[in-house]
Length: 109
Image (cartoon, rainbow, N blue to C red; front, side):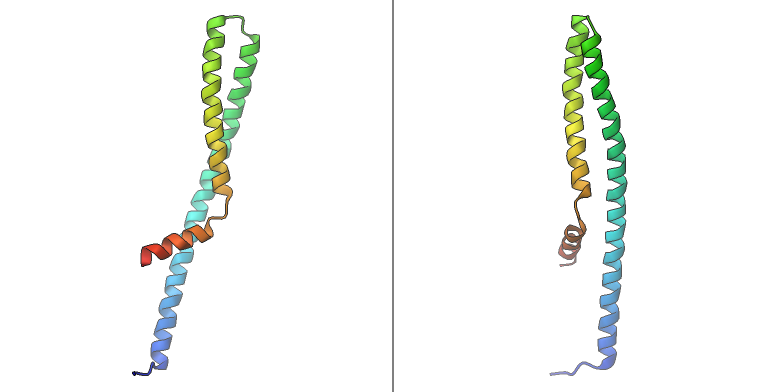
């Protein structure tokens, strides 16, 4: 059996450090992108909530039956959009570092 030299240990250590550094850069990049997405979702969530309030106000203020039907239809769609945004914001807020590491490891296999 061949003995591993100090130089070979040093090369293996350097290679391991390079792999770890590369993975850490990918993790930081993806975490930053997820944070950006979460920020944008927060803005869209706020605007969607404003639309919900406006629709509810118009439904109570309007005396036009056709308008109320349209507002009811819009309200359902806006509520649907709001719920999706809310779920996705929760997904963005979860700690994803372990998931990213598992994905990177599976790619390298």
